[in-house]
Structure formats: structure tokens, C-alpha cells
Length: 255
Image (cartoon, rainbow, N blue to C red; front, side, top):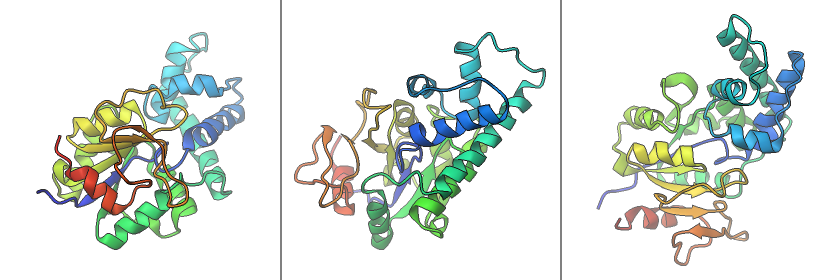
């Protein structure tokens, strides 16, 4: 039997509910600072999440929802500037404690470290966003807990392409069959499963209706001993929250 050696986490929507009250708010503040009359509502942002990556999301918005906007000649630089401003606002929100980790995340990461499991991150968000979330929401030294933080433009093709997971596995020096991935969206599981990884899904408000047929299990969150998770798809048997023993049981199930 193959031994579980590492956990690879997505960030946005998986470790924390960052999208609605984090990234969306930060985008709108960046737009306002730039003198733009754009405002991404909750409903619109749900549609924009079809595209992974902040810069890519701005371009998709212009292509599909704001075609009347007169594009500047240096469009790439314009988009990059907006995205840099958005990252500053997002970091500020994190520093103010406005984006807590999801239920069960900190406990599971602590237990994984104590059990000797290696930790990694594979995300389309920028390295600065990852660093800020870990520093302000997990622990000030928690970046050092992860063997590899694969983030942002470290690979050219973002999720749903599997490239970011291939990169993380290469840096870990492990095979896909020795790791578990944690995701929250259709793009995420297409990426992780595309790299050969068994994947656990914790949904959020934006992704609750996504197709997760390839997941080991689909939950509403990771759960706590006094706050059990809800199983959306799959079988948790007697478990009511994710701990290392439960992960190993799910990991070792025959396909």
C-alpha cells in the first residue's frame, strides 16, 4: 500500500473564504482608486470566477462584460497596475483580521505537521496574497511550515491546467499517488485530478453547484470535533471532521 506523504492545499476558497469578502472587495477598491466606475457585485464576481487568476479575471471582465470600455494602448501594464493595487488592498484586509481561516483548517494543518506529513500549496493567486493570508490568519511563521508554495505565475498555464500541481510535485520530489490535494472549485479539481492527485473538496457559496464527480469526498468544510462537517458527496463513514486518520482512510480506499 502506498503511504500518504504530503498534503497540497489550494488557497482561495479552500483555506479561507477569500473570494466574496476579500478579493472582490479589494478589486472594487482598486477600481475606485484608479478612477474607474467598475463595481463587481457578488453575482457578477461569481461569473468572473470562471476564470482563474486576478489579471486574467480583469481581462475576462473586459472581454465579456464591459466591451464598451476604451482600452488603453498598454493594456497589459494597465491590468497589471490594477492587480498590484488590488493586492495591496487585499493584504490590508488580511492585516485587519477580516478574512479568517475556514472551519477545521488550522487544526488539520497542526495535526498534519505533528504527524510528519509534508505540506505544500498550489494556487493561482499571487505569492504576496498567500504570504499575507498565512502570516495574518494562520501563524506569523507559518510560511516556513510548507515545503513548497507554488503560486501565481510560476507556471504559464493556470488552473484548470494541471501545471501548478505538476510543479508542486516536482519541487516536493514526490509522485501524485503519494499526496492528497484539497480544492473547492471545478477549475481546482480539474487541475489536481489532471495531475493525478486524489482530491478532497470543501465547497463554498460560489462552488456549491460545481461538478465534483472525481472527488474522494465533497464536504461543506473540514469540520471540528464540536462542529461536524456535512457530507455533500461520498462516504465519511464514522468521521465527523477531517483529521489525519480520516485522511489516511480516504486515501487508502480502492478506486
